[in-house]
Image 1 (cartoon, rainbow, N blue to C red):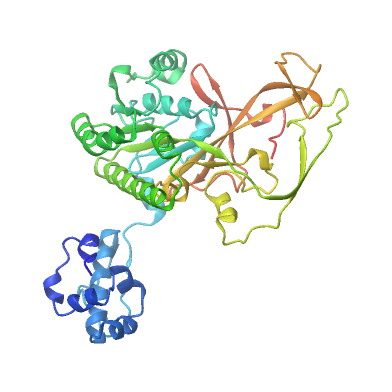
Image 2: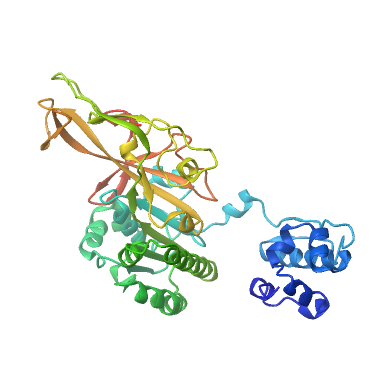
Length: 437
């Protein structure tokens, strides 16, 4: 039970000195104590059943108090002989807990509505998408809007931690000039209230986040921390290390990083927003055959013709990661999603378990056949036919969050565009074509 003090550092071990040595000798961990039947633990450690139940109930009671569960029944040892402790009730319901959230607005009503009001403090929020999807535009808007007075912001300075490129101050100045809310707000944000840190490698990133970031949060009362991007240094230094030992080391690093950021967000009541990259997801297929694309002039499609036709392999088990990842990655929840559009956020399932909210920015091409309409852009030769790329279309979807329902399953993704003032939602009624699924 040496891990007991790692789980509960202030646990009163003196009350159980007659039990802990035997539990340690028989390799019983705190997890075993809480998950296994008390009778099985007692037999394995050769200890009295009632004493084992009393210890387990004491550990459960302390853990309940730490996560916000209260038991009005005073004794710590209640039901010691009955086997089951009263788990109590939450101090607040989910709805009550979200009412008092401090939110940072994206300065667009439709996007804020999809996010449940904006980006809240006290949580780690991830914005993930491929290059050019609009991640940086979202982050720059948040850097400025967080400085606004409530309800649009927090009236607090912000911090930008870069792992790749320096802070684009020219673009920030453009946002301040062109966005009506930022330029006319009584508490106009300023570039002087944006602090920056640079982490060119993984070693400096660990040092800055562990030692410099807590000092900066306390000294400057920072309300928003942006890490752009969380995956860059890991991908650069661990890309060639695919052996089990290296993967286990990286997993442990990600868990420590998540625990650190969560602790800082709660302690300083600040929002922590991280940008993440994506990789292509390869879907297993049984056979592949070329298919010729024959398109008559004058047809207009919202997606390019496929250059290959594939017959899919048998569907994976519902308990496999290949099946489950559609529900937490942001891509593939809709069965009609083309396989060539599937992406997977970097850092895998381990990192997905560290964040509270994942916001996916999806970028897709909008195609029309050659010679149709005005304002057409350079053509591409795809599938044997000439196609003109009119423009990119982008959607924002909430994959999961504790304060708002996801948008993908409800088909409530918000289409947005990048403009000189940042990001703004596109009126669905005015959209040129339906979203390609």
